[in-house]
View 1: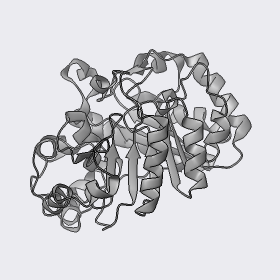
View 2 (view 1 turned 180 degrees about the horizontal axis):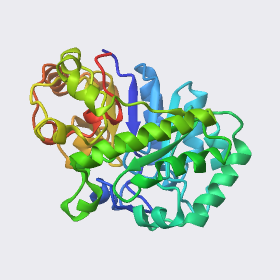
View 3 (view 1 turned 180 degrees about the vertical axis):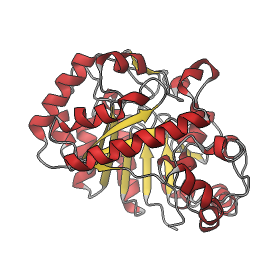
View 4 (view 1 turned 90 degrees about the vertical axis):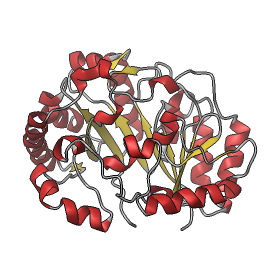
Length: 342
């Protein structure tokens, strides 16, 4: 399989302190990929057939100085671009909003429908700044694909329908992505974020109502199988290599254990590049600083992708042979990206 998607986080910084974030220890603000090096990485990626670039998996990408230039260059080179941002910057870099219009899939993480909940969930964020930036974004977008993200947790579970109303009021959003918080990313200090089985059933009911309201507004919603459908089709889903389910519910539904022999095909076509230019199979491995496949300061992207180490891990994961972080928890596999055998 060829490398199709490159996940790049060019700076290890975030200006918020979200209670559900599993990457806080990575937000040191000490590392960033040099702009020249990042442009060179784009050239390397293009040469070996990469089609998709994803920015902002573990950090706030707008804190990277030069992001507008990177977006413009990526689009000029023909990449499909996805980017996740909280839109919480106080002063945007020149040309940033215009560059946003070049992004094929722009995801804005908001997670609340009210100022009170927003401040509780996204600690350090300013509601007035968000509102200002959303209104400014609306001046540039006229039908392009923009999605609002909502990480469902105990503090905001009662605002799902209100969030649909809130998003629709801006007129430029085309989709809402509801992502129940993955309990594997939650530190014990954030127990109020995690779920129990009753929460999952309540979430399912509220999600169904939110989906109905979204359809009335003409908004798309990321669809998940219901809890009952997941349980009923568990064996079939595993056999085919598909996992579609409410992210975070897995351990509560299936004895709180992830099947050790379940295959993961993410590495068949994806790589994650950290702010230190280290290459990992995914953001989860980066979070735990495990399974590093190479260092772009020492090797080319092509060399790392074709290395014996990468191919060995790729084969092991495809066979369900898991090691390290892959045996403990896996936010990448457990639903958010909806990994399939394709």
